[in-house]
Length: 335
Ligand code: IDC
Image (cartoon, rainbow, N blue to C red; front, side):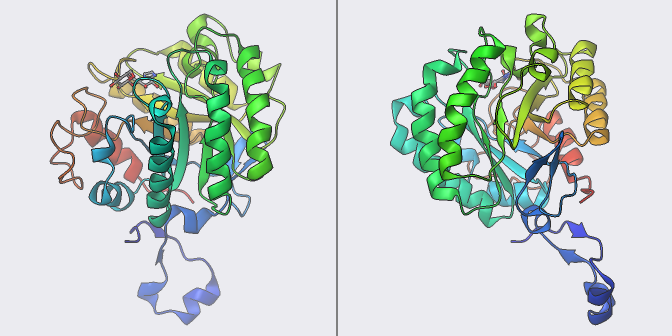
């Protein structure tokens, strides 16, 4: 079940004691890196080394749980060699609010699935409409209290507390974060927390603002990062430049992006997507692609009808965006 990703020789002692062929060990991302921590403006592993995580987001788990089964998650860990699975739990649109017990249990289960495969997991509070995070604040306190209580012994989680705020100011988002984070920290002092930004997590750019509103007025908490989302066929130079500037000043995690338009559909712009990926590699910005499902849209990596039976490994059931992103996730890690 372990991934085949290879890690370079760890030390001369190991090399001396082991036969030459065993000098490289197959390790999972979590075995290699352990508990993550925000270090200055970057994400660091347990050894204090700056690292970049790369992986996939689920589609909404109210709609596509059939794409998250033993075989598909094995493929994500072993064939795709993903470092991280984002568990996308919508709050509205037939999501969490309709049955908190069912969806919380579904998230618990997916956390265990990711953990068993040595992947990191982002617990995505996928608020989207309404865009005011305060609308769901008491629900978020209930949900994250239970998640943090149950999983605080794990070293492979990140909590994303607001997918995409919209129609609200940065100060509202900051206030939401400052009310929710202490509730989580009481139960789980170590897990990094990812905070959404203004205008669909564009650091304000989609509203004509810039990243300076966050830089000048950061959330009053430690071990946090700010999220940035982009869709390469819709979001060009102004987005790319904002990401580049922001990453030199504050910790940024790209928890969602697509190679197509912001609808998650339409044609792919792989040229511009590669520009983003080059920038993110250079600045060690972690990223997660939308999405690991067989939805009809071009940004869902599998062709319709792939779930639940697959096959999930290889490229036979992948759309163009899937082939492209699988290649880039498989590129060896530098950790
Ligand atoms: C889209 C889904 C689509 C769903 C829609 C509304 O692909 O099936 O009907 O949401 O729920 C986002 C959001 C993400 C969107 C995605 C593509 O975080 O939920 O998924 N997107 O539109 N932000 C920008 C794009």
